[in-house]
Length: 65
Length: 255
Image (tube, rainbow over all chains, first blue to last red; front, side):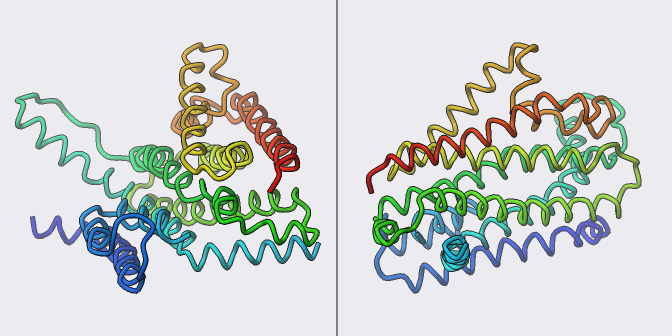
């Protein structure tokens, strides 16, 4: 099993990095934003953390116009 | 020409500051990485499922085709959905914030707005898709050495369909003005109608939908690029029609 994980690392590292970049950017933007069009800050933070990929995208599309 | 350049700069700055371009590129990079990974993991997943249900048969070894097949199913579904969601509001949000009124009263040509926005969205889509395709391609040639046919054409088909969707967004935006849901529903409706029409085999070959259904057949060499011509020509013509239509409608729109 350990060997298999090592084999997959060239995929997993970039994948995790990309998802983290997206999530952290959205989190930083959400933390700085004071007024929200829909919902509020805690809810957006939860959405961004819980829904991988879709959460940050929804935030960028709905809140950053 | 200066109008075009200024507008183009505005679009670029706007999409960078709103992080839309960034989000689009990251999503497509993720698609590019995930596809070969899924292909690599598929035998393990299937094995686990088969052990549970007590079915046993020999799985064929994973090949480059599996990797590309995963890429096309991801890019054609999730990728295009993300494209439509991100660029769906490119024109509608200008209506809803009335940001174009000042520019148009100062003499900005309306057709320039449509053209620049279409070209900008198409360029952003091209950039994201090329990055994604390149990532999958590099992983695939590193892990599997199979020879594939018409690789470039197969990627090009999905790209062309994306451009068609962008022109569709433009036409729908011109009709619905400030309603972003209206645009999404229109795009969805057109895609569903094309799917239903595609059940008839004679019509299917002429639909843009045929483009994203034929990637794998092209790779396997079952279809050649010549077989795709009716669909490609139909898509290009309908894209141009969409742009002309959106300019005509937009010209009559009062701001």
